Image 1 (cartoon, rainbow, N blue to C red):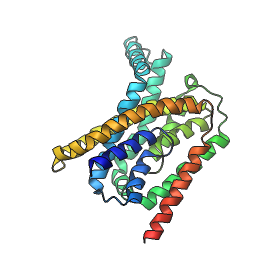
Image 2: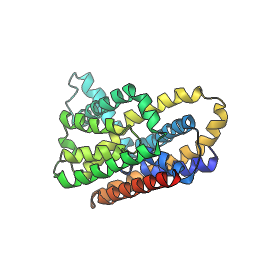
Image 3: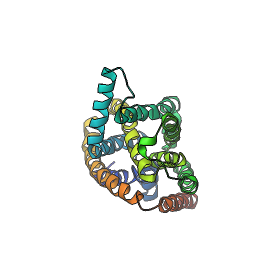
Length: 274
């Protein structure tokens, strides 16, 4: 991987991690369409590390919310009433929502890594994202706010996050759609999606760190990865800010169409090159 590739893919990650169009899918498809031959092991580690960069972005954006949630959880635990306040309750629901993806990630880790090496599989999963976004817009009533979420919502949205460990199935797209199918308003579903991404992305980053240390020439690799990391963090922060404003006024259909077009283009290129 070159520094130029690192920066471009970091930009792609920052834009697509929070937009419901699958960052992991784009990190597979973009190098494929551009004819870049990046070793699978390097690509997988880089993909997870730039996800950690966007983790920094989401923590930075929601820092006040996270501090309020952490304080409330500790205070309520101290008083032996863990669900006493709304912020504490939200914190526990976020952790509960991460359980399905955590279990799935452990059980099918090898299958997921293999999927990262398959552009055609990624394209079909991207079609799945397009369909999911369309269904969420059609079926969700969008009446409930974030304060109305309960443990059933958390498990439900967590299930959608578990599905999105495959490249092409957008994590934000799946979880926002899951929230909307539970009748959450678009911005509320998006905020819950972004907040629940933090524990999962942190765990993935720690696992990638272990793999990174074991890679040969790790110092040289880091020098290439760092520009992409910085690019992803800055772009991710700006994307969160834009998307939350967008979702207060407009539907998800444009993202559904984009996913379908990108998937179709990838499949077309795949068969042309055969």
